[in-house]
Length: 213
Image (cartoon, rainbow, N blue to C red; front, top):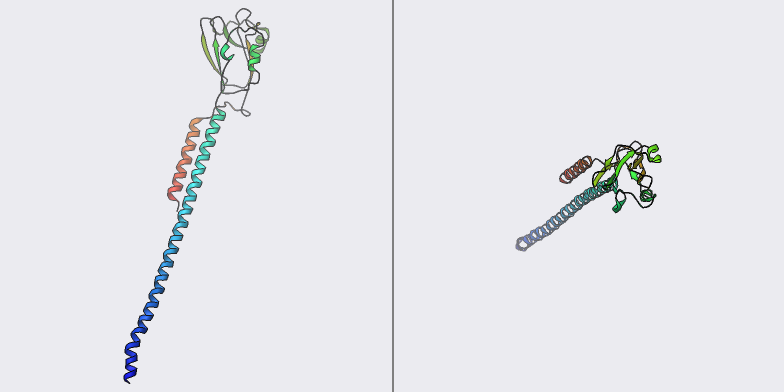
């Protein structure tokens, strides 16, 4: 009887200590696994969120680049007629015809005429252009003048100097103005509309970033 009591008294605490020890290790392992799983899940969420942000930022960058390219590509081109020679009586009859060769003029482009003090600029019909008619209206004839003309319509345009025989000597220019597409009134884009579009896109992107989980 004494032996049984001895075994009970001495062995039972060891049994319970052993059980508690195993239970404590299992709980620690479980806590570690839960902690690792939480960290992995948090890392995945962070990566997904960063992926969404990078995607949106890339879209914003591409959109701004595309719109900027569109503005540059469709921006009106300024042409100084005759380049450094300006609008004056040339030394050969084909001077202005040669100058216009290999140039494509679009609606919205701008012609700049540096008119010399002894000449004039008149826009005329094809018949007056072909005949070098000395029309009475025009710009110049009283000093050096810089005249800027926006090509606001498509089709042929004709310019001459109606003074003396300047037109016959080659001071005449004919060009054909093309449209960007059928019925397009102008090549120049509406920059305010493009700016508003960029603003709306950026606002939506910011909203998406701040509300994505």
